[in-house]
Image (cartoon, rainbow, N blue to C red; front, side, top):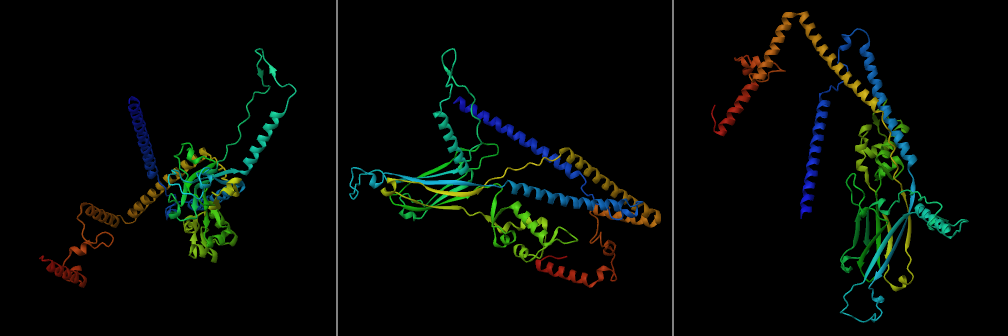
Length: 478
């Protein structure tokens, strides 16, 4: 009882600590987002500044901005090409050998003292079968066989000096070093996210009423080791039946990055039926470059030919939109299906042999981490922030110059207009502005009466008449 209370208090303490860490991280994220929001992001030169600055500094700055935009596009394209090259070079295929077998228990022909054609209503057991699905990589299987053979040869070999005796008379081996551990063993469950067995038989004829057996790989939380339910080489299950059953075993592949089955239109462009998202985008980019479908004035704009129009259903598109546009053309990969017949007859079990299949699966490439130069990135971020501040100060200086220039040309008119603008702004703030004031500048017209003003127009009389009619229907009076 005390241990349970202690465990509960410990769990509460851990939960409170986790909540404090979460709140602290959320506060840091909020402050970082606030700082980013306060930083100026506009780095474009204000319009009209070139008329106020002596020299060609503005033109040179705009040329540098254009070069920067092109350089960013080239760097992104080269990064995608490098990732695709690394991915293609590291992609390998491995052969997985699968053995499928089954054993039986309590079948009618297994009874020794009971006539097969007689009825025994007192029998309390039912006939069952157990199916076993095993998988192993071919190269690992061959390596294990070689190591076993080598160990057998070492055991049978007799060295010249079999042992050396120490002072106590105990035999000491000449080489006490332990063998180096080999690479981690790849289990059957590592290749698949789901395995199903579909029985070719109606559930009405099944003693237990099931027509499918399913296993799904559990998804552990980040940092948690793989649970035993997702780390095995052999999958077994037991069901009730005393007749042979045909079944289909479906293996749903678990790949990183995930590959998809392509639609017919997209497969015609890429000349493949299965691929992952990054390879699809890269393949479309290679097709666009090969066919010369980029616009000269805007490289991001793609002029679709007949094949691309069949995929994207539009004459032109922007290249950054391709990852979103290809989504309707992707579907999950179909499972790998293996047929098998569950045998319960005595002829088969007199000398049983498993059914063996060999399937080819792509291995998951090891991601190559391109370490970015952190110092350079920080320095570039500081340059961008300083540049945004300079552009912001330049915009403020331009507005100040325009204000002083207008005042210098005609001080009286400028002051009157400025006072009128300030008056309208004050009326808006105090809520005293009339209708349609601001952009149209009709506040004075609405204040003046008479037949020659706004109130004498046909539109105003029609609006007043509609308002009076509506008030009469509602039972109100003005």
